[in-house]
Image 1 (tube, helix red, strand yellow):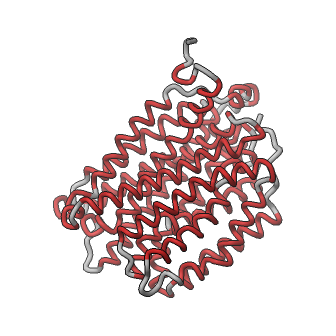
Image 2 (cartoon, rainbow, N blue to C red):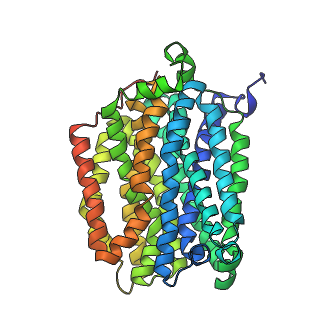
Length: 432
C-alpha cells in the first residue's frame, strides 16, 4: 500500500466509501448531539432551568437550544474562509472535536440546585461551542462530498450527508426512547439523561479518528492558482454572489419543518394530545427511517431530472398540508395517527433535503464555495432553525396549530416565489 493511502488506498470502491464515511460522520455526530438535546429537553429542563411552571422551564431550555444557533454565524465567518484557504480536510477534524467537547460539558454539568446560576451558564457555553462547530461543519462537509463525487451522481453521493442527519436523529431518538424505557422517571430525571450526551462525546473521538485519513478534494487542489491570499479576501469574494447567497438563506429557512417534525413533534404530541412520550419516540424512529430511505431515492432522481422540481414540491406540500397534519394531533391522540402525521411530513422534508446540499455546492465556484454556502446558511439557521421548537411552543400557546401552520406557510410562500423566480437549475454545472 502506498504511503499516505491510509484506510482508503486499496481500491477505488474503498476510496469512495472512505470519502463518504469521512465526509458524513461528523454531520452524523453533531446532529446526534443537537437532536438529543431537543429530545430530552423536557426531562432535564427543571434541573437546569427551574421554574414554578413546567412550560416556562421547557421554553427556557429551548431558548438555550436557540442560543446554540447564535454560534453558527460566528463559526461560519471564521471556519468557512479557513476551509477555502487551507483545505476541507483539516477543518473537518476541528469541527468534530469541538462538537464532542460541547456534549461532554452538558453530560457532566452539575444541576442548578448544586451550583446555581452556573448550571445554565455551562449549558449555554456548551451550546455556543456546538453552534460554533456546526457553523463550519455543514458547508465544509457538503463541499467535501460534492467535490469528490462524479458529476452524474453528485446528489446521490452527497446525499450521504443528509442521510447521516436522518440516521443521527434516528439513533438519538432510539437512545432517548431506550433511556426513557430503561430508567424509572426519577432515575431518568436525576442522572439517566446524561448518558446520551456522554455517548455523543465518545462518538466524536471516533469521528476524529476516521477523518485523519481523508484525502483533500481534487477541485480544491486544482484551485491553488485562483485562491485568495487572505481570509478577508475570501469573504469579500463570496460577497460577489448575492443572488446565490439569498437562495441558500431562503432554502435554509425551511429547516423549521425539519425541527418541527423530527425533533419537536413527539414533545408537541405529548403536550396537545396526551401521547405517551415513549410512543412519540417510537413513531419518530419509524418516520426517520423512512427519511433515510427516501433521501437517496429523491437525490438519485434529481441527478436525472434536476434540483428545482423537488424543492418546489416540498414547499408546496407543506404549504397545503401543514395545518391539516398538525390539527389532527389535538385531542385523544392515538399512536397510529401520530405515526401517519410524522411519516407524511417527513417525506415532504425528504424532497427538500435530498437536493439542497448539492444545490448549494453547485451555486458557487471552488475558491469561495464553503464561504458562499456557510455564511447565509448559518445566519438563516440561527434565525429560523434554532428558534423552531421555542417558536412552536409559544405559537401553540397563542393560537394552537393554526398559528404554527401560518408560520410554516409563510416560509413556504417565500420559498416558492424564490424557486420559481430566482433559483437556477444547477444540475449540469461543473464544480471545477
